[in-house]
Image 1 (cartoon, rainbow, N blue to C red):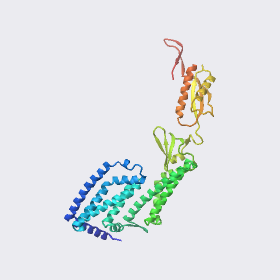
Image 2: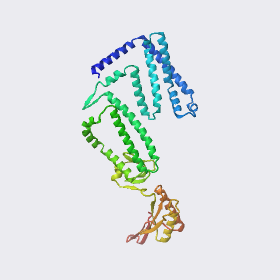
Image 3: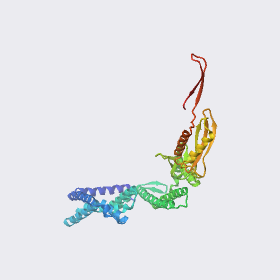
Image 4: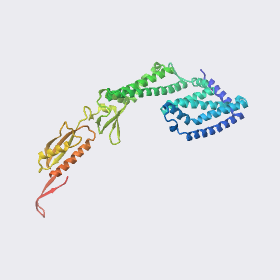
Length: 438
């Protein structure tokens, strides 16, 4: 391994070499040719993209071929620059010493390397992964083209921190970061594939499907991390020195996250709630649209979504309107004055409820005289509908039907009546009745 002084000497030698190159007039000639070639390549790429109708050109072609054509057209400027620099390199090599066209050769190789990397990374759908892989691969290719790859690797591996039997160096951290990103991306692809297979298994309940998907994702992620650790030469037992303190810190800092994760697993296992259920949790009501590792998403139906931690569903009271079945009892309270026949009132209420399109035929409506009050009689109408969706709208329609039926039969809805007796005064009043609309 290189020491710090060796790394400094290497950088100094490289700086002297580039300094000698910059002072040469051939450097500025090559630089001018590169600028001219870049302008011409940009114009060629713009002309190709403007005159090429990719939709009409690739119609009927296989998917991979269409994607390859799209990448080539979008990278036409890079390809043109690589060709122009190669031609300029050949011309200058035959006209003068080959060393005087070194910069053109480097430019052509770098452009060609970027073009190849762009074609290879086109199969990746994640934009972040495309950029990470493309930039990392191009930097490695550039160092290799410049002949500095080995020296750079040695320099990055020359300094480090000793942690027991583990030696952390910049090179190790770079390897770990790149390999970890690639491994997690691959594990995500595998998880998505397995998730599609699990969701297609119709013999599994939605709760079991979600539970299996979460377990598969967790296991693949742990496997990817362990595989990368072993690939870069990190012995997990070497980190045991810090496991106690780090474990305590993580335990205090992430206890809520861990509690929500465990609660989510419990909810998926006991099937008390599942995607599609209509629930009421505290002041939040809606239908469960998704069950995630930390929370569930409850769609309120008015554009809002409540993100409720899984732990709240374990520790708080939860009303699941569709736990056993979707049939829902609707209760309508109303009143009538004492001039009405209560039997006729109940008959009209039952007919109105039975006429509702959502009313269940298997469970007929029922109407009860609930109470004699100061203002009139109170009734309780109950009927079943097939699901709790739109329950308020059904209740409103039935109450409007009751109003129409009462108007037709001459039944009045009661309102408070107050009797006032006034004794004495300038105008003696024996009896005054004031009706106050409620």
